[in-house]
Image 1 (cartoon, rainbow over the protein chains, first blue to last red):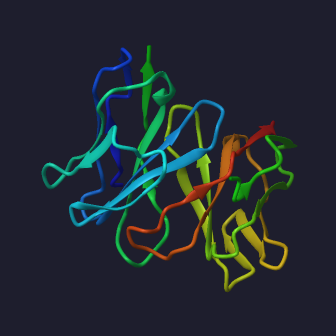
Image 2: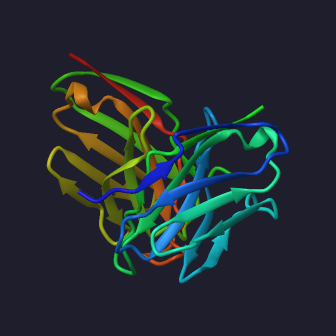
Length: 114
Length: 115
């Protein structure tokens, strides 16, 4: 069964460093999302992406964040200058198309900022 | 801003009995509701959804009930099995499909099914 994959599973970085989290959505899906979950808190929407541009972003998704679909398969989240409070699980999700609400989630990347 | 609330952080039931997980929401613009299950170190896995035009949706052992006037939904698992032990998230969306279909999640309920 097709699935969303994410790499790396765990990323440790120093505060102020740039990180890139990678996702490979399900191949025929059209809509892509990033969510994050700070330990002990709810899963929060960050950004949605369609047709090579951002469709919607939350207040969390400030200028330090960017997303890109550099080729036909990868979908990346970049944090330019990480802060301690960026430590969280980051989930990528994808949606097949206009018909449906069930987003398919990847296993997540645990980001630890020291 | 808690638009979706799951007031029970945990629930413990015996194998074979019914598990009932509850969720409340405040935003009347929500039109679709979903339940996701999450095991440790994995991403959320979709279980079942319901549109606001329905009050019940069933899929095998899982049934979701929606009370739109009370802004309340519940997930029933019958019979509960030890493999159902996981965190269950309620999520809501104001859109059907498309890039604006962001999901708003509750805080989750940890279900433990005792053998």
